[in-house]
Figure 1 (cartoon, rainbow, N blue to C red):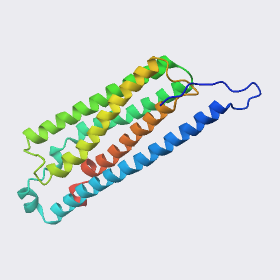
Figure 2 (cartoon, one colour; figure 1 turned 90 degrees about the vertical axis):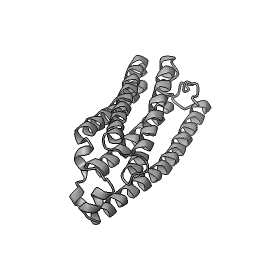
Figure 3 (tube, rainbow, N blue to C red; figure 1 turned 60 degrees about the horizontal axis):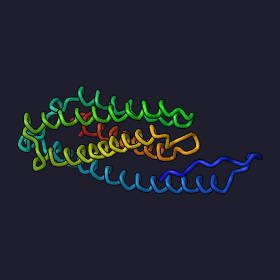
Figure 4 (tube, helix red, strand yellow; figure 1 turned 45 degrees about the vertical axis):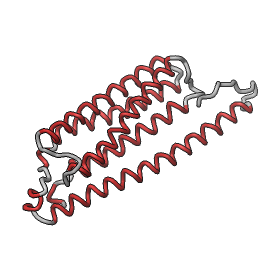
Length: 218
């Protein structure tokens, strides 16, 4: 919940409203960090499960890999996902720019950068849906296959977080356009930024484990 902005006293001391706002912002940020920590543990567990499943498959040998229909690395389009990763990372830069603009009381700049973030997030989801279509319809993967189960659960949960982030971003942009945020009242934008950076960080880990590590490494 955002708070109205109150001016400081003429001698530079902070008013009671300013102090209350700072305490509220600190508590909100602390609570959000607790939330992010719990979400990170969930993702780390799923990443570990995927890694162990893959390790077990390749330690059993190539015949076993083929028998359980674990796709070759070439079936996972590294080029497509690399571009998608760049899009998501660039969106983090856009979030940083939005925060910089809100701190400078540039409402139009905030809205422009947040709209760009929502567009980039939507493109990421579209590319992920395209990859899912290839894996399901071309390679025959689904939630019941040894590869499809851990893969779709892990990347699907991340995609859900991106979707939530896109919706959150659109709402934040609308509120910014309405003049809700300012240089002294921008914690909601900053918390959204923390969430988006968290989503990006998790994707970098997923991208490395799922797409970049060679099969021979397992």
